[in-house]
Image (cartoon, rainbow, N blue to C red):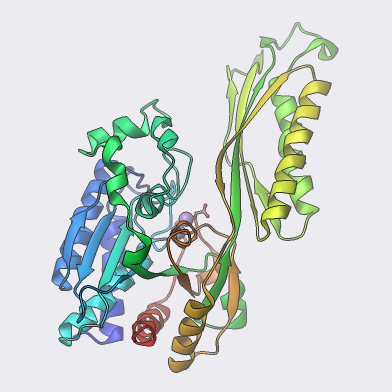
Length: 410
Ligand code: GLV
Ligand code: MN
Ligand code: MN
């Protein structure tokens, strides 16, 4: 009943049940502090109860399950990942880590087994940062490092984070109550799909994450002058979009020219947005990631200089704001070693690899030692409805996680 294979089948069924909770029928989109977030939390809380945990929702909207330890006063081992998604998401990103954690506790509970330490399973409320643009809101609340200025950030409808919390029956002034103290947490463990092709190319189901790359997000607003597409001569235009286009290409050229740096413009809005009007106002985002914080900062400084130079040449204004920054987060050597031993014990050749994607573990690294297990992604595809991991690999993931729990005894 609670064999890793049976638990993996249950996880796959639950992945589908969560994927059905979406803001948009037919595709999966579940943003922070929406009705769908509330429904997903309720379902996950039920599964936590079935697995023998007490459950609650914290002051930031994270759903938290607790499985008593044999010595319940010990610092807790936190395990988890996120329940929010990108727009038109895959169904494994985040959810798989929460569901495998619950499956492992269910296995312990079914066997009448307690680890010496308590286990806290977390379904983080916001990792993707889709709604308010800044990531890790759920995990940062748990680390106690959520910047209070974030509460004034607004979503695309102009609703502030603080107002959205109120609509969710939470209080921005009490979000600090979600925080854990350093002394209360033994370590954090996250299982996640790789979201890239490395493990598949090596034909290995699982790997050990060494570090999570840092990231910087910029918001760029270019202001030129709207005008008639038929009457303003080319040389007299102050076209905000052509200046922005130079900025977008500079992001690509600068990041492509540096080692282990990637840069993306994922949102670009142009106004007034009419076929016969020269664009007067353009805004776009820039997301820069790198393994080394120094290289990331260098790339960001060069991108900002290039955007300003393009704006000056084209006689438009450019306002650049850094609205999110996360430093690179190394995984703890003791956690990497424990995961490696667990992977070997499961009969899998170990592979160590860094993570280019952001993860809750990066935020949690400010609170405690963190470790991450990656499971192979089919085709390396992620942030896409085609995202997939096989039943066999999920079974392997559950076995590895259970073995890590044993490794962390004592
Ligand atoms: C989240 O998945 C991110 O890396 O942006
Ligand atoms: Mn993601
Ligand atoms: Mn994720």
